[in-house]
Image (cartoon, rainbow, N blue to C red; front, side):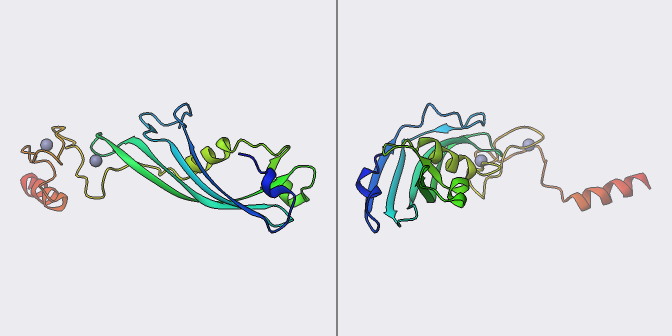
Length: 167
Ligand SMILES: [Zn+2]
Ligand SMILES: [Zn+2]
């Protein structure tokens, strides 16, 4: 990306529409990868103090469901908001929070990747209704009804049955 267009005049703004291939980036989680390029749309506004950047990040990840272990496509839509400032002009607070630029040409891939990683859920589940694998016989309960009886007994009733048989 090149910010030369906006860097010199306050009030200027420019729109960027970028499609980047992130497949070489390691998401740090086993069986999680980029299924599609990352589409970034940004509006960069020169506020004189810094460049205020707002936009969206969209991509699709290939994930594995933590319940049924099937792989599925996980769409990721993020809001992006950031401040970019030239290192030599940045105020003290900007030095700590802004993305610092040394030249007009900047590579925001790392910054975008950071946002994606921060937005990842703790656990991937293919759907809120996913029934997962039977802990007893291992069938995928989304595809096959399980016949082994596991999960059909209310644990309170099971405890009661045990108590009665001990009596
Ligand atoms: Zn699932
Ligand atoms: Zn079962």
